[in-house]
Amino acid sequence: MRFDVVTIFPGFFAGVFAHGIVRRAQAEGLVTIEALDLRSFAHDRHRTVDDRPFGGGEGMVLKPEPLAEALASLGIGPKAQDPNRPSVILLSAQGRPFTQALARELAGLERIVLLCGRYEGVDERINQLYCDVELSIGDYVLSGGELAAAVVIDAVMRLVPGVLGNEASGEFESFGAPDSQIDADRQGVPRSQHGAGGLLDYPHYTRPAEFEGLRVPEVLLQGDHRQIRCWRREQQIRKTFLNRPDLLERAELSVEDRKLLKTIRDQMGDVGVK
Ligand code: SAM
Image 1 (cartoon, rainbow, N blue to C red):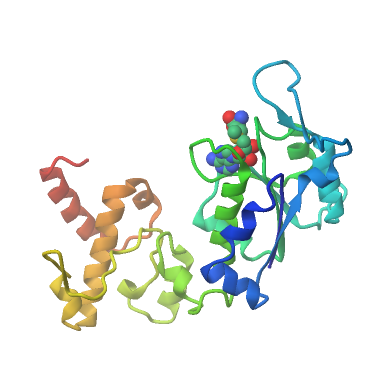
Image 2 (cartoon, rainbow, N blue to C red):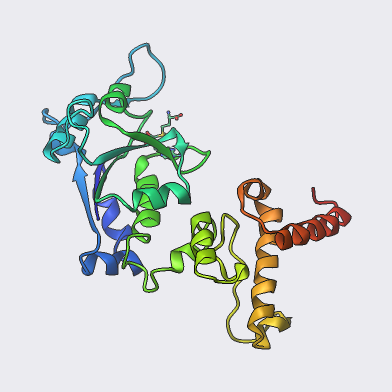
C-alpha cells in the first residue's frame, strides 16, 4: 500500500516512520510512505504557501494553488474529473472521527493521499474539489495535520495483510471487528475466543508473576484455557463499561456477556460509578 503525504514539514515523517513495524513494513516493500514538500509548489522566492483569510480574522490559510499543484504532481486531479483516482484525505479537526472501522476500510485501498493543514487550515475549495473525506483524530486542536496523518498511516498500515506477524492479531485487539466474531462463529470457534468484537482489549501480563506486591491474577497462571477465556471476556466487558460505555451500545454481546455486564453494573453501582 502506498501513502503520499502533502505537508510543509516533510522531514517530520522520517523519524516517525523509522521504527518498529512501520519501518519493517517499508523495508519489506509492503508499505511505501512518501512525504511531498508543499513549498516546492510555491512560485515566489519566499516559497509562500499561505495567505490572509478573506473576511478578516486571525491567522493564515493554506493557499489552494500550491495544494492543487502538489496533487497534480501525484497524478491527482479534481474528484469530479477522475472518480477512479486514489482517495484523498484532508486531516482536519472538523472532520469525521477516525476509527478502527475506518482504518480497516482504508487498509483495503492500494493508495491514499493525505493533506496536512497548518495555521487556520486549508482553503475550503481544496476540500470541496479534491478531498474524498475530512478526518479528525479526536476532539482537540493540533497545530498541524502531520501528527494526525502519522496516526492514520500507523493505524491503517498495520492492518495491511502481511504487516503484522500474525495476520489475525489486528482482529483480536481493542475495537476488533464484529465481523471477525461472525467468521469465528462459522468456523465453530467458541465465542470467548472471538476478537474484541467492538469492545476494548483485556489487560495483559508478563513475567514476573509478582511485581511491587501485585500478583498476576491466579487464573492466568493455572493453564485452564476455558477459565482464561472467560476471565478475559469479563475483563473486556468490565474495562469497556468503565472507560468506554458508549461502545457497549454497539458491541455484539451474547446472553452470557449480558449477564456479566449486569453483574459488573451492579458491582460498580455499589462504588458509585454510573
Ligand atoms: N482552525 C481549525 C479549527 O478550528 O478547526 C484548526 C486548524 S489547526 C491549528 C491546523 C491543522 O491541524 C488543521 O488544518 C488540520 O490539518 C490539523 N488538525 C488539527 N487538529 C486536528 C485533529 N483533531 N484531527 C486532524 N487534524 C487536525
